[in-house]
Structures are given as structure tokens and as C-alpha cells.
Length: 315
Image (cartoon, helix red, strand yellow):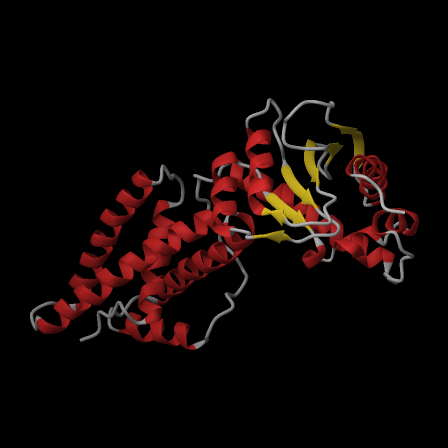
């Protein structure tokens, strides 16, 4: 027998308490929004994360049989941001309908502005698998028996990883204007020829082995940082890539000038381009109110442009 939206919320509240407790979080409170208020959510889950930090995830329940538009979700996100709550994450929960006209660019802009991640649990993200953790709950929601067979332990591990990713994104968004590039032992997912190309260009400068290793490491650190931002702060990643693309055009132009001037040495061009890139970086940071790791970002991008070929100081 079909249920109402209010009944769905009432059944969903204990379900999420049970799941969060089963994946190892200490749940402090799971409660519904006070009737009549418009704070952009239906259920608030308060819990301690694995580090003992108090967290709150807000769920907006949409038990729709008809079209669910993205604009309806945006309204709730704006309401939540305008409330007195401090969300660690917002989840739009819709068991029956996918969200139509979803605008991922707008979603990222909202995340960047409001400083909390926005996620969707809908049919296209296989929300029915989550509900299959409780067959009685599944039957209430879908008005049919659950035929899904899950490896419960594996699924719960994946679900906890998704929640932890939300918390990581929240922490990153809280300092989203601060760039922190760390040294890494990881290798970027890329064409190996890029490293060879950079080596060939470094040959023209005759750097010491120590310098050569440092240039490669700075580029590697930058590439791994950029890969990580795809999940943590894609809006910041997009800004950096846009700036790199602008600098790529400058690299083409200045490389052409270098090739036409026979008195222009590779070493001088190398240092001149660094100066031009640094001036561009200062404007980029100022225009986007950024701080942190400016030299690491500068060296990483310049070495990446050299590896990709638009920047070439070889005679």
C-alpha cells in the first residue's frame, strides 16, 4: 500500500540511525524538522565521526511519483544555508524519481559559496541498494518485496566511504580558498611520454640531478593535488585549470617569440617565462581570494606546460 511523504520521513528516520550506527558512527541524534518551519531539510543526523568530531548531515526527503526538478532541490539548499544550522553535508533523498534538469555547474557553485557538499540519493545512484539493507523498510517504500541480494558488509563499507568523502569535502570547502600542495609518493594517471618530454627540455638547461628530480617532483605533486580536487573541491580545480589554460596560450605565444630570436638563450627564456607566470599567478590569487602553496603551484604548472609541449625553451 502506497505511503505519504510524511510517512516516508517517519520510516526513514530510524533507518538512517540504524545504518549510521552499523557503520561505526556514534549517533547523537536523528530528528525531523519542526513542523511548519522552512529550514531546507526533513531529517538531521548528528553524530561523531571517526575522529570524535561532532558532525551533522541534513536530508531532504522527496517521495515523489511525478517529476522532481532540480530547482526544487536548489530552493531547499538555499533555505538550509540561510538557517542557523552549520551543515557538514546535504543529501537529497528521492527513492522513486531522478532529479530532472540537474545543473552540475550550479551545484558546484552552491557548494563553493555555501561551504557544504551536496549529494543525491536517487534511482540513478542506485538508492534502492541502500534501502535493501532493511527489507521491511524497502517494502514500505516501494510497496513490493525486496529481491536485491547484497553483500551487506561490502555495501556498508562503501556507504561509509561515501559519508567520509562528504566529511572530507566539507573540511576542504571550509578552507576552499587555501591551496595546500603536499609532497606525494603517488604517480599521476597520465601518458609516460609527458615525463620524457619534460626530461628532454630540462636537458637544454643542464640542471643538476638534484634540480631535475625536484622539478619532476613539483610537477607530480601538482598533478596529484589536481586529481584529488576532482572529488574534494571541483570548483577550485576548475579555476586552476582555467588559469593553466590561459597560461598555456601565453606559453605558445612566448615560445614562438623565443624561436624567432636567435640571441635569446634557453636559460633566459626559462627564467623570463617563470616571471611572466608568477605575475599571472599573483593576479589569479588576488582575483579569486586564494592563498597558500603559491610557489608549489607556480612550479607545478610551469613544469606541466613544459611536459605538455606548449612551453619549449629548446633551441
